[in-house]
Image (tube, rainbow, N blue to C red; front, side):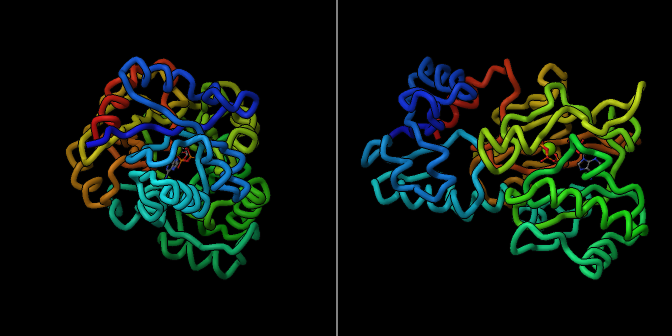
Length: 335
Ligand SMILES: Nc1ncnc2c1ncn2[C@@H]1O[C@H](COP(=O)(O)OP(=O)(O)OP(=O)(O)O)[C@@H](O)[C@H]1O
Ligand SMILES: [Mg+2]
């Protein structure tokens, strides 16, 4: 059986090398005896998939990707371009969409994750008041909520474009959603999602929102490096004042074929110690049916247990800086 290789994005300034963000993963892979290939991420984003994969050798067999997020349609082009060269991306395009976009995984994780309602959009336009009222009603119509798209939030613009203090104040919901859509611009993924706010351990006062350690999460945005910085923005640009609360303590669990191959902190707090309770999660991950996924878990502040904050495709989930990813990479090339 051929051993899977891993495709990384190439450094835009030096296309023969991995993008600096992924260089350490490529190095670790090499130390483990694994092989990598490179793809032109900007080419993929621009819809030039065939050209973007030209450095991947023909008939390369099974392949994983570890790189920047791609919109699901661009991932489908990527997979097709590899198939045309005799490669086989081990996460199919439908599998990628299922793990990457909230509506793809929500049905499986419902009950284990905050209640959510979404409004599909055709382009970067905010939903109208009737659609918002209807989505808010699906969440019970009252209480605090958060706004995001199918993939990302604007957690660093918490008060302005993420946190809704009271769903029954539909005018205020409309303002936060409009600002969110405006800031996401062309990178709005799929549509607008409203989620019931839940109090997580370490989150401090909801009005102050989550605090990142570095102001960006490496994989932020569906837009690659340039958009990534833009999507995350400066740390807590409109965050709380002195003494404001911290961020929820989140664990990121990496699953391969239904088994947790790496349990670590969220990349926003790479030194955080985490010990999530995984009792309920394996069955859900297996039901989702995607081979390589991540789940971000947070503990409820009232001690009532761990919740799935979000699910992601393992290929485009960021690894915390400094984590030992050798077990994860070894599992991928043994899969
Ligand atoms: N339903 C919720 N209740 C309370 N806090 C939430 C909820 N959803 C999200 N948050 C907070 O907002 C943060 C961002 O939300 P989420 O993880 O869904 O978005 P993201 O932009 O995809 O983040 P990531 O950097 O993990 O990709 C979470 O880490 C958590 O602190
Ligand atoms: Mg998250």
